[in-house]
Length: 223
Image (cartoon, rainbow, N blue to C red; front, side, top):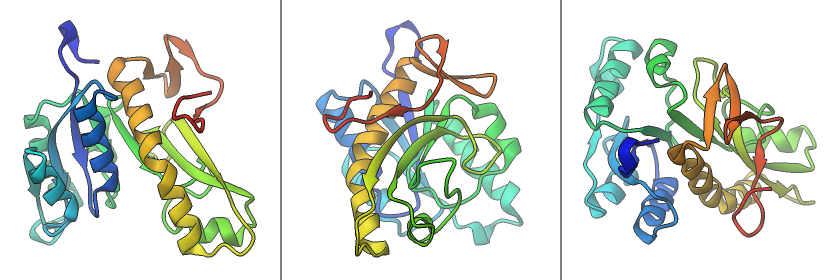
């Protein structure tokens, strides 16, 4: 996605532990992801994701939503800082705040999110509990383009895990976390390289409309 052969620049939004951020940092460092994380931004000053960024030498900033008059003012402050980092791609990696549609619009096609369900099933929160209540036999995670529709943008790729007899929320959540990192790295690589694009609200792969999201294989590639 970066022009003139430059290394694509990634900004990451994160609210929590930052394990998906760490997966991106590690992949950039070892060459699996041809990109560089140039900034990490959070809505929680104590988020461990910020410490992960600082340990990697990546600038990190946080803001408290309570310091702003409303969500729009908070989003404006965050995304002014994001824009100043000049990213080619913005990755929401465990970012737990809704982002206003007006703020998302300039970034459409360049912003992705990882969500712990097989979208379009179980948009929003508490996905693992809802999957169990629904009797789902297969669960997983999705990486999708961010639009003004909550968890509604075109899905780039998914990874599936079985729901096993006796699973509780914690067991199922742990199984999903086990495939999230590889999924996020592989899907972000597609976006950074320009192979995955958002055109007319649809996923295009290698210049052609995709009929379905890609599926992550056990070897970390896509089927």
